[in-house]
Image 1: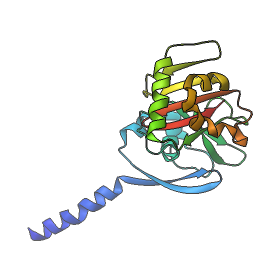
Image 2 (image 1 turned 90 degrees about the vertical axis):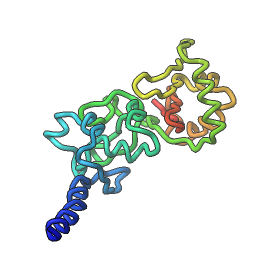
Image 3 (image 1 turned 135 degrees about the vertical axis):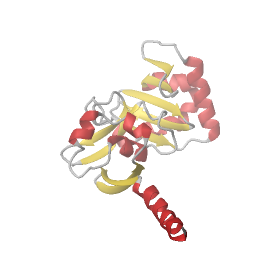
Image 4 (image 1 turned 120 degrees about the vertical axis):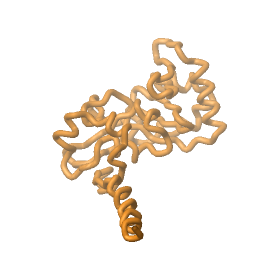
Amino acid sequence: MRLILVALLTLFPLAAEAKVKTCKTMIDGQEQTLSYERGDDMMQENRSTREWLFGRYGKVSCPGYITLRALTPGISDEQRTPFCLYYNEEGGTYTGFGLGERDAWLTCKAKQEKGRFCRTVNATTETVDAITGKITGASGKEDGEGKSFTDSASGALIASGAKNYVKRTLGSAANSALSTVTAPAAITAAVVSVVVVGGAVYVCGD
C-alpha cells in the first residue's frame, strides 16, 4: 500500500507538468520560448482549425494567441480581442500588434504599413481615469473626423479618428497618451486610436 501511495505522489507532478507545453515564437527578430496549458480553453477558442492543421509560420511553433498574450501582458484574454498580430514574412518574425480584423492565424487582415502599430502607454492611474471619462462621455458621438465607442466583446473604450479629433476628444488627457504619436514610426499615421482596456492604455496608428 505504501508503495502504491509513493507511486501516485510521484505521478501527480508529472501529470501536471505534462499539461504545460512550450513553444517558440519570433518577435522583432528575436526567438522567444513561451508556454501555455494544453487544456487552455481560451487559447483553443481562438485557435482556428486551419492553424491547428497547418501550423504557424517559419520557426514559429506557438499558436498565434500565445504570441498575442506575450505582447499584451496585464490584460485578460477577453480584453485583448480587439487586437491582431503583425507578421513580416520576409523577416520571419512578428513585428507587433494592432487594432483590426484577424485572419485564421490571428494576424491582421489589413497589411501593415509604415505608421501602423499599437504601443502601451505608461499612464498614471489619474491619466487612465481621465481618458476613460473623456471617451465614455463622447461614446456614441461621431463628428465626421472620428468616433468614440465601447467595443462590445472586450469592453475596451476606443477613441478613433484623425489626430485632431482624438486630441480634441481627450482634451488635456491626450498630452500623455498621445506623446507616442511623435515617434518616427507613427508620424505617417493618418488615423490614431486610443484604447483603454483593463486599466491599460494603448495608442494605435492606422
